[in-house]
Image (cartoon, rainbow, N blue to C red; front, side, top):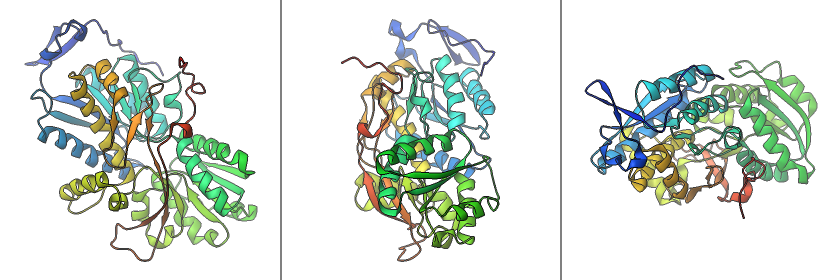
Length: 415
């Protein structure tokens, strides 16, 4: 994608003061103290469309990180501000909104995205203008050298990591013959690749990879074929409303009695909307489940802040990524003692944090967050309350060895 706009010039910067653009000296001349006004974080997410429920929770949780930062004094008296924009789940729209945030709203950083496609277009705009971007959507490509820059960070899990954790568990427990029902875009394709890699050494057989358009509402045409293939496992490589519809229709068609249904990203929001019966027994992975609070103090603290802000509700998995993505950037501002993107990026590279799920850090070669993958199964009995929808059946601990190597991604790491 080519954008007809001038790239950011690191030699000069502009501040909006009293409605006029005033040229100021570059940060490398040591005048960072001249920075004034709110610290603005652009937040482009798909508030409308198939992923809207997840995006709205990302906003709610990001706002908690903003409030925490401001209530604790901000940075040199400066408060943080979240500028939310609807990217409509469209790469072109995402690029346009991001460009506006940078050039019109003069944001300092960008956090956001909820699609493998939109995050790459957002990243391209930020990279070209040397604005730090912390992505909160799963992607393998964003870490590859062709899309990466010193300003690119990835707070979310990767499909390779997620599918690998779920696959290693599921293939050993439920069987080796697999059918994939895959959303036909980068997220779905990367998940299939992750499962295939995990299954190579286990003798896993792919019977079919059935591709469906993003935003599919009716999956009935695909279900008879899946049934006829007689897999041990049906993998739902989809997201948001697509996942909700696919699992409900597969349940109604009776597939659960013939195969195990799994999803690499089993969404709390989809489970809440779909109900206990439709999702009962579906197994999958997640970056976060609020029920971890019984064992992880940071989860309890995060959940309690969300409950207070939202009438006793609990945060979702992708909502938690909104919280972590913003909080990490704001913590790095304090560590760097600056809002200059490059300096904040250097601080992020050093950051070790436990915001809500256990110890995490950014791998230096590609700025990927190294964190645990939680394995869950949907339940319909013995629920403490309406939010108690999953059993945690395992946790794959944070380990760089579970990621694709820096060399595979194209990063040359000196030894």
